[in-house]
Length: 443
Image 1 (cartoon, rainbow, N blue to C red):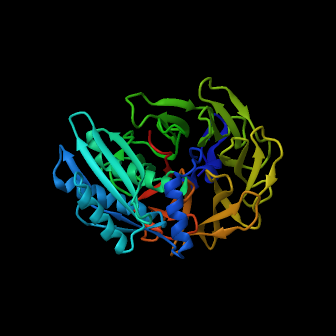
Image 2 (tube, rainbow, N blue to C red):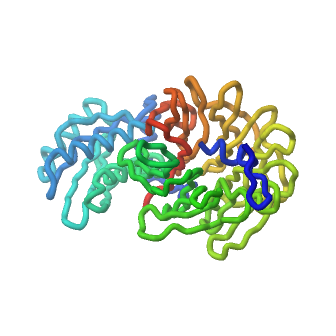
Image 3 (cartoon, helix red, strand yellow):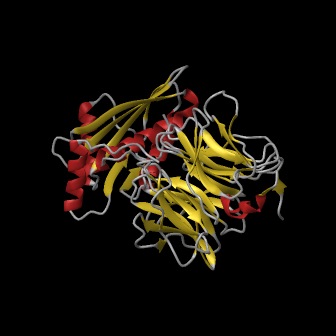
């Protein structure tokens, strides 16, 4: 059905909204962790074997917390595909050097290349975790990393995610993506419309973010994780708003021009949003300043231009356009110049530029919809997802190793994650869940 608002055709939402159903710089790995990793690879191993015993509870919690933290850390490391985790063993001795050395020797004899010792202390105002990472490939079982982390007491699982991310950093030079959240759109009994939620990357800790009774779509995390931009019919029309999931701040209106205001995408510096608007009569790509509200138009074409996504440098924007007939993926400079077609010969939508800048994920329709990757130069397009039904709406993890997406394999839309090569596809959110947006790492 076509609806008009102020004389502007809102049937253009077919492309920009119907389908709606970046990361920190790399750091060099610690020398010790890098050496262990190289030793494992030279030995012909494909994964690093790491022991993750139960965390020692120093104060403020029962022993069950230590077991949960070890389990969460182990699961995080296993999901990376880089580690083979031995977990469930008793906590390493905290104040007995001889017993600690013997425990580490036993792990090494069993084939472990590294061991993780975790401690947790919970007080009234904070939960503190400490990790020590041991190199079991060296005769002296040296400590190759030692670090402390703090969270509020109600977020103890975050300690495990932070520990896991730092272990990944020590061995690969890039932080892991466990201490992150997924924002998504859900439909729940007793809640009108489509509401915005967030959840830990592993599917724990569901938190509602909107309860406005309206249809909300296309969440997009800001680079500093402070806010989420999204499309909402809160006032009856598709406008762009901004909410603050971790702060008590009121909802902000970002774009409420006549016609479509949809598909927000943050610039890497967090100062601007690229979005689709039809305020001048046709669906085009615009950039709006968060600080001033100043609007800059980038595309001028009779076709529908929609769904912008920034390169991690902020110098280019990929987008969907049907200017050549069927929708395909195009790339332009951030000024709107030098437009070039990236994909062809299909129905291609929902581009998402990887945090590393080398790949663009998109949705392609070939019988069913699927998640595809193409190199940033347009070469080597390939499909990632497997399974029945449709898969759409990919979102990158901040390290560029994983993708979240929606699929309807079970008869309703659900949120999955997978590795960038399409392996280890995991169900994260079940039951009428769409439009995932993977956050940057939490502060």
